[in-house]
Length: 413
Ligand code: AMP
Ligand code: GLY
Image (cartoon, rainbow, N blue to C red; front, side, top):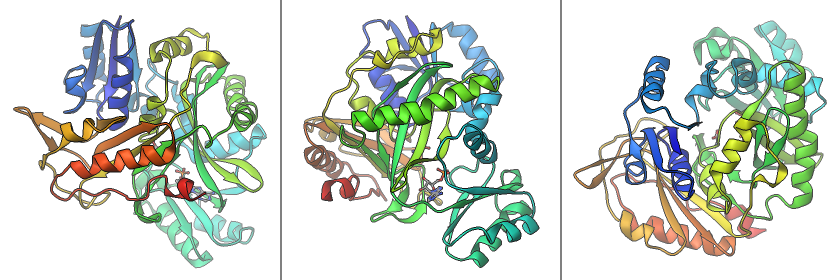
């Protein structure tokens, strides 16, 4: 069969790498792809911001299966991925919070405010620190943990004025600040049933020890301990299934990947956010542990026959360390020559996924903020981490930055 993957990040490289292992695939395309993906799939030009460009590509290729990773679902374009109504789980935090409340799914207490007066009066019901969130999509910049009520008012005022995030901040959500370990819990759904993936943990801050600004994700790991079978069943029964059933009951059937961002608190798991797409970089370590055919699971979701047994997983541990351009998530330069990729890929258990790279005349150059996802698998987490860092040490480009403590907290435990 002919498969088309849309996107250009590390997550898309991991999907292409995994799909290529399927005996059912005869032709694999990625649009637009990146320097590393070009070695494993035919990369084609496309403007992901333009529905017309995507439609014309799909009309030309006639793929049997299109894996829509990001743009379609984010925009809720009607013909592909979850419909706009279902994608609201991701695109509106106030919708997601009220939905969770309606369906008795655990989440932090919250208040929705459309004016600074509402913020002022709602704040009296919260302790500090308090979380202030822009309602709309804000590329990871829409969440502030305010240490005082003054700060919360200030941030909320900035968001509401439109100066900080434009229309995304026209409404804000105040939320109790939760403590615990974060867990990324992804499931495939066909609108009715769900099949859980293994759990993973992201590292969102740019610096070691969770310091500095938020990023798209600087690394992630997955082990069988991060989510044992009992907890996985609990999350399926109390979070994933009720979400899918609730969406269906509300006339907005949810098909595809549901990403639940959870906080594992002393009071139990609570939902922080939803995404209607694969996580990046979580997808890289998750797919490193997948032993069954990804095509089969994707088809099951599309064809409405998802079942709990759609995935077979290795008990090995895996970890992805993101190498980024100096300055990311702020301004950074591109076009730096990348050396040592072959040596890094040769380390046992390592696969280097490309995110922001291009290839010219056989040489790779940086082309984005997150450049590479150096991913390793091993029998235990400690060895996987060692392998990933050994591989990182072999790669060089001007200004390269990566965190030295990915999975560090899990190793200490
Ligand atoms: P969100 O986009 O809602 O997932 O928020 C981004 C990040 O902000 C999360 O991954 C958490 O690290 C943090 N965060 C969001 N909501 C809360 C909360 N209620 N309590 C503590 N941290 C939070
Ligand atoms: N790693 C977080 C995300 O994909 O949104």
